[in-house]
Amino acid sequence: MPDFNTYFSTENIIACVWRRRLTVASRRHEQQFLRNLTDAVGLADATDEAIGLLPPRRLWPRSGAPAVRIARTLSLMAEHPDAPWAHNLRRFVERVRNAALGPNPYLLGDRTIRCLKKPNCNGYRVVAAYNLLDSVIGSLTTRYLRDRLDIPARNHQRAFARVLRFKEEHAKQRMWISEADIQSFYDVVHHDVVRDALCRACEGRDVDVQAIGIVEAVLGSYTFSRDGLADGIRWLTARGIEGRIPWPEDELGLFWDHPRAELIGVAQGHPLSGLLVDIVLAQADRAVLVGALRKADTDALMYERVCDDIIIVSTDHGACERAFRRYCSALNRLSLPIHPAHAAKYRTRGDVRRFWGAKTKRPYLWARKCDGGIPWLSFVGYQVRHDGRVRIRPASIAKHVERIEAEILRVERSFARAHARNRVESVESFVIRTHARLVAMATGRNSHSNRCWADGFRLLGGQPHDAGQLRKLDRVREHAVRTLRHRLLAMGYRGHPRHVRRDSDRYFGPPTSYFARFRR
Image 1 (spheres, one colour):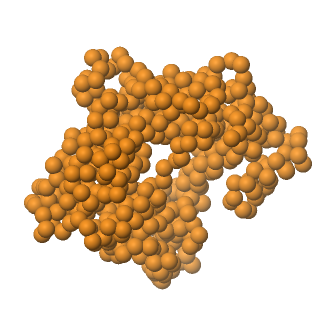
Image 2 (cartoon, rainbow, N blue to C red):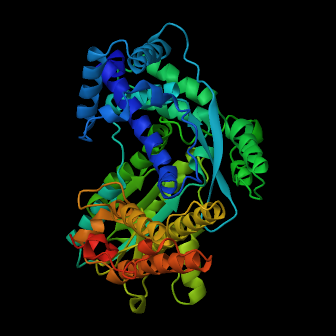
Image 3 (tube, rainbow, N blue to C red):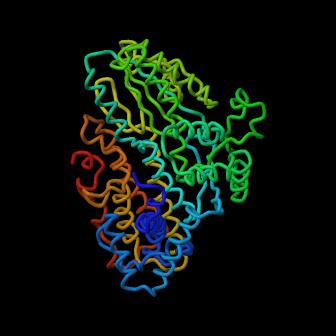
């Protein structure tokens, strides 16, 4: 297995720079879309360090494969050694190696704290953004530790596919489901718990001491009460936002006398954060699976975890109940509070509302409502019915509809600013381009696109699914475009006669629809 130094090769560092540069390009593309319509909208300053470390965009390779981009960059560095970007890139590679592999202890640089709104409430969660140097070091250290500790990254598509396979293998048996969710894992995990879990994971393995030092530096640079909560409140106050940052201090008081004085919380947004989740919760995974092996429940039990969300599916009620209790006990030993357990009922509308609002559910029968069960299972954005029919979680549909409406509002405001300055070419130029953008954002520009909303639910296409959901999204999008046209025309601007088209309120065809996207 490669040693720690090997992970910090020039090729690996350039690959990380490319990922950051493409992220910056994606953010600027959001602004460029409006600038293409009118010059009333300007682009943000190009301040990200990754912009000056790569060749100009006209020299970028046409292929999007990472290996091609890396090879092209190295080739251009050899051809143009005196180019400013090549000089900057060589210096950056040396900076990364000196910071991660040098004799001096690694110290993190400045970070930026921002808040993201939680759905269906007035709460916000704190997210940290790090400079390019720290992001590259964190990414490569994460890759090294995952390989060395044999902790692969978890994928929500594979996790849900496993649920479907278990359902298919036991199609003729009754099933019980249990779910559990930790209250704000990143904000409640104690540093000592992380260190103890990392020590256990490293037992019997040759782990480079410099990698452990980088983890220690990340832990020492942040606590939620000292940094996250205070910086998050300042961020909200500076923007005049009336919101709150929830923190389960009372629940943490069951484990610690003075939670605010403890070293609690890891930065959500650092590349190492996802690995730390898997390292800590690996103990809970073992508690569930080893206990199932001892009780001979393995054949009747399926346990899956993605980040801190878990689901237990079993053909035996007792096995499901025992696995759920083992998981809760393991979290209690790790000093991690979970959301209150909900005794599942599905009789009245109030019961249904409380069921879907609960994040931790005691074992319930996965069956028809008339048989005393609950028909739907929800996991990682999908929902699957007791008979195998799959649909997208309604909350995910609602969130996507909100994004469509926000995009329409953004275009409308941009049009109003441009109209006030008399810089509008035509209403139709706004409408047609906005329609095309909504298509690309939702279903992709072509059948090979993997940077769209629909790609997050690719398993829907291979299963019996709720087509009504997808047709509704098609109607919502077309109605939003028609509404945009009517609002823009109501502003009193018609544009030049040659730009006014009577057939622009047209349907772009099945290739652009949500319904057809999952029929491919």
